[in-house]
Length: 359
Image (cartoon, rainbow, N blue to C red; front, side, top):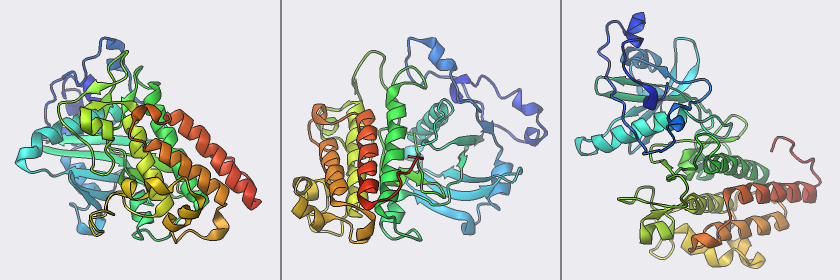
């Protein structure tokens, strides 16, 4: 049940699990000023469940540190098990007082947007908890964590080139779906796409997460102006930084940065490097269209029998176009999906492998 459709909690109180709870009362607000009111009623096929604080405590053994699987600026993420036995990831919002208002808005936006979406490359929202001042988001549990951890040696295993291409294709499909406007009638800008927000299934299929900063594009427009810069340093679209105007191409730029992370195994921003080498895009941008120089920036953990130089060169060319300073010169996410499919095919053909039908 998305936030935009919640009127009262009275119906929920009939459930025995909520009889003793003092649930937070949500007053409906328009998160986005949309002329088409039909957009307000669209929802994800399976809806979202509402949980109590007691259920969150039971699922995580009272937020046992042994169940902690991640931390971020929003708070902590725990692996939990619902009463049904389903394994889930539970994000517990823990923000300082001066950030509570922003956190509340992000919480509502994420529930509202994810409740409308249904795509295999977007993380599924199981439900949420808004009990008193407590805020929790409950997602499907993805055992392989996030992409950045695997690229930087925190994960159990390094990914070969076909696996990295599969991740890139999955993430591209997820963003292309958001940009298509299929779900709600108008495009959605993720606005915080990055490698830590690309989660991986047991088979290393990519699912995009964290929609708290997402923005619906005003109907009939190609850009929207924002009051302040939101996102993550290292993934910011240069035009967005200089003009404050957000476009679908802002996501394309961030996607290009993630492509570079997949190619090089490096972080988008590494403060442990010298002043001139901290930003990945600035460090490698001029090397991407030279086959000789490409070898210098490729992740040394990539096994040579997993890639062809032709596929690497094609991939690097795509990444370089995604991170061009001028948004008009970047490809669309739909074009990225098509090119990545071709790159994967070329790589498999060059290695004499069967083409992966799942991609």
